[in-house]
Image 1 (cartoon, rainbow, N blue to C red):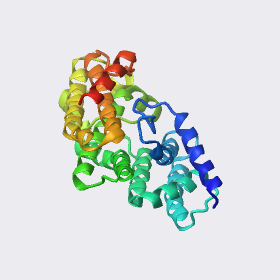
Image 2 (cartoon, one colour; image 1 turned 45 degrees about the horizontal axis):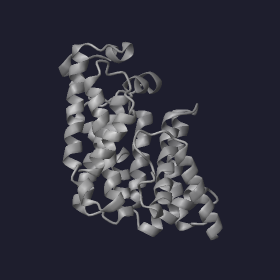
Image 3 (cartoon, rainbow, N blue to C red; image 1 turned 60 degrees about the vertical axis):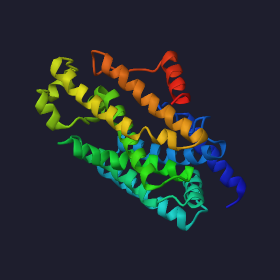
Length: 283
C-alpha cells in the first residue's frame, strides 16, 4: 500500500460523504481538519450498510448475506490493509490509527440486518436495543477519534445518539411505512393511545396520533437533555460540533411538536440554523 493509494481512498470517502444530504452535519468544516477524512471513512461504511438494508431489488436473503460480507470485509481489511476497495483501505487505516473497537462496526451491521427482518417494535425497550446498535456505535467511534472515550462520555453520547435516531424516525413516519413497511413507534404506546396501522396507512393526524407522538417527542427531548453535558466536556471544535448537533436535534423536535401533521417532515431554514449556531456558541 502506498501513501498515494491511501490518500486516494480517503478522498473517495470524503467525496461520497458530501453526496448525501443529512440534517446533522457529517465531517463538517467545524471538525478538526485532521479528523475529517477519518469521520468520512466511518460514515461511508455506515451509509453503504444502510443502503443495503433499505434500497435495491435484491432479495432479503441476498441483502443479509451482503451485510455479513461487509462485516467480514472489515476483519479481512485489518488482517490485510492493502485492500483494493477504497472504503476498506481507508477504514483499516482509521481503525488502526485510533484503535477503534471493531465490535462497534459489527453492531452497525447487526442493526441494519435487523431492518431487513424486523418491521415492528413491541416496546420502547425493544426500540432502545435497536438504537444501541444502529446509532450509539457512531457516537462512540467519534469519541475514540476525539481520544475521550471514557465511560461517562460514552454514556452521554449514547443518550444523544439514541435521541437523534428517534428524531430521525419521527421525521420519516410516512416514508418508513410506505416505502419500507416499517413502524419505529412502540406498539405498546400505539395501543395505549388508540392508534392503529390505519393511521400510518392514511396519514391520519387526529388527537390520538398527536398524543402518541407528543409522548415520543418528550422521550427524545429527555434523552438529549441527559446527554447535553457532553457538549461542554469536549474541548474546542469537537465540543462545538457536538453542541451544534444537539441544537439541531432540539430544533427539529421543536418543529415536530408545533406542527399539526406528524407525517410531515420538517426542514431547517436559515433562521433555524442561526439559532443552532448561537446555541452552540453560547452553551
